[in-house]
Length: 579
Image (tube, rainbow, N blue to C red; front, side, top):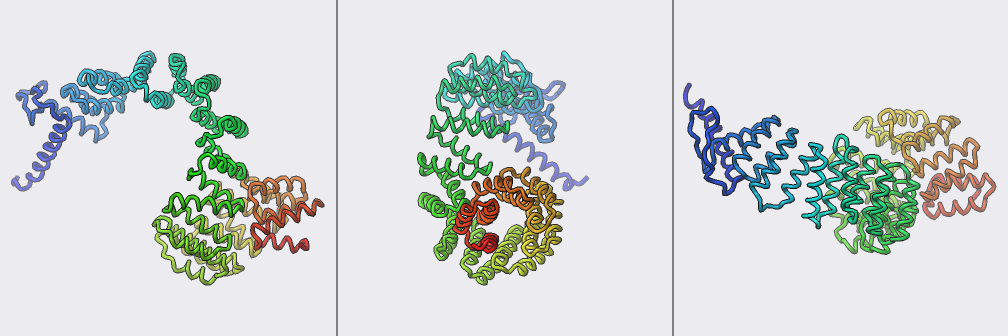
C-alpha cells in the first residue's frame, strides 16, 4: 500500500496520542519522574514520556476513551488505576466521579481515602464530601453520621448550606424514608443549631413524616425567632398540601409578629395573585414597599395589579419610581406608556414608547404604539403603523394580525376584523390565538354557529384551555337558550382556572339567565371584588336591579363607567334600564 494512503491516519493517531499525553502532563502539573512500570504480561521495558510512565498514560487514555464511549465501569476502573499510579488530586477526582456514576461505590470510598493520602494538606472538606457521597450510596448510616458531624465541625461558617445539601441529597435517594432516623439523630446531636432543625423539618415534610417535621420546625423557631427561611418552608409545605386557607392564616400571623420579612411577604403576595385574590395581593406588595421602597419586584407587582384594578394613578407612580431608580428599564416604559394612554396623555405615551431601545422589547413597544394611537381615535394611523411593522418570526406575524384585529374590532369594524382573521388563518391554519380571536368576533356579530365551530376546534386542539370553554359557555349563556350546556362549559373552565374573575363573571351570568339570582349575585360580587371591570359591573348591576337593589346597581354602573366609559356591554345595559 502506498505510504500516501496511510500517512493521514498515522498522523492523526500520533497527533491524538500526543494531545492526550500533553493534557495528562498539564493535569499532573509538576508530578514528573514517575517510575516506569511495564504492564503485566508485557515484554517491553517501561518507557517514560515527559516524565509519565507508560502504564499511567495507558490507564488514563483508556479511562478517557471509555468515558466518551459511555463504557462506565471500564472508564471508572481505568481511571481508578490512573489515580493510584499518579497520586494526583485532579485525576483522583475524575476517578471518583466516574466511579460514582458507574455505581462502583466501594471504589469511590477507597478514592476518598486516597485523596487524604496524596494531599494531606489539602482542604479536608473535599475528602470528607467525597467520603460522604460514597457512604450515602453504600447506605452506611453510621459512617454518614460520623462524616457529617466532622464536616459540620470543620465548616462552621457553611453549616446551613451543608445541612441543606445533605438533607436534599438524602431526599433524592430511591428510599428517602429510610434516612429519617439518621436525620433525627443528627438534629438531636446538634440540638442547639437551628439549621440542623430546619434540615430535619425539610426532610420530614419531604418523606411524609409531618409530625417530626413540625416538631423540628418548632425547635428551629424557638432557637431563631422570626426566622424567615423556616417560615418560607412552612408556607411551601402548606401550599404543596393544597391547604391555601391554612397557608394564609400562617403567613398573616407570622407577618403580624415580624412585619419586615420581605421575602416572605413578596412570596405571599405572589401566592395571593395566583389565587386571583388581587386586592389582597396588592395590599401585601404595598406593605412591603413601606419597608423596602427600592424593591423592584414589589414595585412591578404593585404597578401591574394597580393597573389591572383600575388604579391608574397609583400604577403610574409605581412605574415612574422604577424608571427613576433604573432609567434603562425598558419594560417599565412599556407599562407606563400603556397607563399614560389610558389616562389620556397620548403624546407622553408615544414619546415614552419611542424611547424603548431594548431589542427584545422593541417589537412590543411598536405594537403598543399602535394601541395608543387607536385609543386616541387615530385608527387609520394605528392600522398603518401596525401594517408597516416587519415581523421576524411567525409569533411576531400572529401578534401583528391580532393587534390589527383588535383595533378594528374596538373601532366598530367587526366585519373587517373578521375578514382579516379569515385571511390570517389561511396564512397560518389552526393557530390557537387566531382561532380564539375569530371566535370573539363571530360572537360579537351573532354568528353563533361560526363561533361554536372555532371554539370546539380550539377545545379539540387544547382540551385544557379554560378560555375556550369560558368563551363558548358565555356566548351560549348570553345569546341562546342552551343554558345547561353553557353552565357545564363554564364550570369546566373554572375547574381549569380556579378563581379567575372573568370565568366567575360568566358563571354568575349563566345563573342569572337561569333565574337563580342569589347564586348569580354571589359569583358576580366575587368577580367584581377581584377585577373591577366595566363588563362585570354591567352584569352585577343588572342582577342587583332585578333584585330590587336599584340604588346599589346605579353605584356599581357608575364605578364601571369611571373605569371604562366606552365598554359596549355597559353602555347597552345602561340603555336597557334607562340610565
